[in-house]
Amino acid sequence: MATVQLKGIAKKYTENYAVKGVDIDIKDGEFIVLVGPSGCGKTTTLRMIAGLEEISEGQLVIDGKAANDLSPAERGIAMVFQSYALYPHMSVEENLNFGLRLQGVPKAEIDAAVNNAAEILHIKHLLDRKPKALSGGQRQRVAIGRAITRKPKVFLFDEPLSNLDASLRVQMRIEFARLHQDLGATMIYVTHDQIEAMTLADRIVVFSEGRVEQIGTPLQLYHQPNNLFVAGFIGSPKMNLVPVQVESADAQFAVVRMTDGSSIKVACDGRQQLKAGEKATLGIRPEHLSVQSSDQGFGVTVTLCEQMGDSTMVYAQLAGFDKPVVIRVADVFRAEQNHTLRIGINPELAYLFDSSGKAVPR
Ligand code: ATP
Image 1 (cartoon, rainbow, N blue to C red):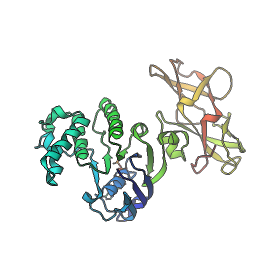
Image 2: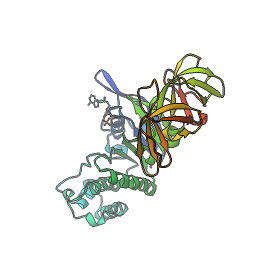
Image 3: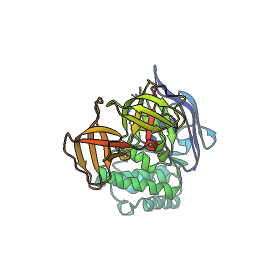
């Protein structure tokens, strides 16, 4: 097991930075997930940690040792690729023991390591098969098994579930969580799927355009997003982000005007960031909106009710706003198209972001 520190890490390709000023302090045995939209620099960051990509600026420290100039082999790291990268002509057993054979490890030791990995991953019955005779999920396990046999200090995973179908992804997600528990190793995992990030991570690093937007536990990111980007990225269904105008702000509450003219109260300390008359963004998660029987809150016109079984997603239009507002009702709920609803907001469960997109503190 090992700690991994990234200090001001950057990657420059000719003119442009793919990654810039990345600081991450990874604890021993931590499961860290790097998440963000396509092209935001997650894979480049992972490849710099692995030693597959040169670091343009900054320092990488693995287990307390400067690692910028260490070869991939010297870093004590094993990387599992999205494509699995198995040797097609070798059996599962040979794929698992290949690295150790190359290192000249004694046979008894190799057999024990392969046996251990096969047991952990439930693939003992597949040892004689060739990769082409395996399902996607089984191939993924072999790729992970190959990493385990090398007993690395740090595991790196690059979108390991993206080639699997939805139900297998859910199953393998649980396996990853178990694997981390069993091995207790430091793991760094890249994905663009925020649900994978939320369910697997001890801490999530949210990337956007080559920079770190926020680092925190899944619940910190869900409850205290730093800015509009993180607020919009974390959470499923996504947070409603609605333009508003500030009416007043003090240490406890801000009052904002929605596009339909209703005034909404939000619990926050807006003294520093909010000024009357300025634009801001109101953030409310679909599960935190409620259909009212009184005339409180704001009015919307129903577009569609989507039945989820245990809940209903109501898509509705707010006057003066061109995107749908989504309300999650925790039960079966029916409303006709074009029906008007009053929607209530709990001031404690709403967020405000100033005109630059920065969250207003509570
Ligand atoms: P994805 O989820 O699509 O894999 P990502 O977040 O992993 O995306 P990276 O692959 O790290 O993103 O790429 C980050 C940026 O660096 C992108 O804009 C990409 O085009 C650029 N980039 C990556 N490799 C190179 C390269 N060899 N030369 C020039 N630019 C590159």
